[in-house]
Length: 172
Ligand code: SF4
Image 1 (cartoon, helix red, strand yellow):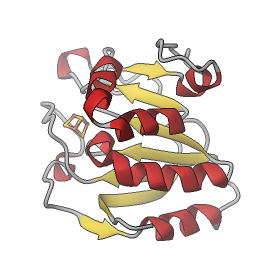
Image 2: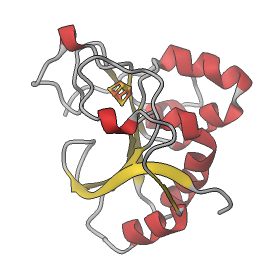
Image 3: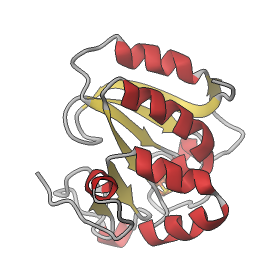
């Protein structure tokens, strides 16, 4: 792989960032600045540290109990190109991918008109949790999400049906 990924850190055993046991990569840099954000240390685009994506692949490969990998943040779609490279390797391992974004799905499609890697990343992932965290809509009962505006979008089904038309995934 050519480029490094700027990250804030990784967690190897999360059960709250998508289905099953997950390896979570918190990317560094976020333009959204949602009030009440739980990860404010991830906002600075010059913060965090550079990580070799190959090392992340090795860590994921080393644990057969891992269901998949989650790209969280920070804003993953600000580093879409390098995450596509990493995502392809993770898919080769047979693991699924969850991606979080402070952009809505519709905003990502628009962004993808000038940045094809954004669309490529959407096609590689299986589940998208979209939209900013909105404090007034905070709800602790939601699965994998912080506020009611955020949606669980079934990218896997959309990929299989070869459509960009949004298909939401029910909880569970
Ligand atoms: S998009 Fe996520 S990381 Fe960025 S400010 Fe909002 S809640 Fe925080």
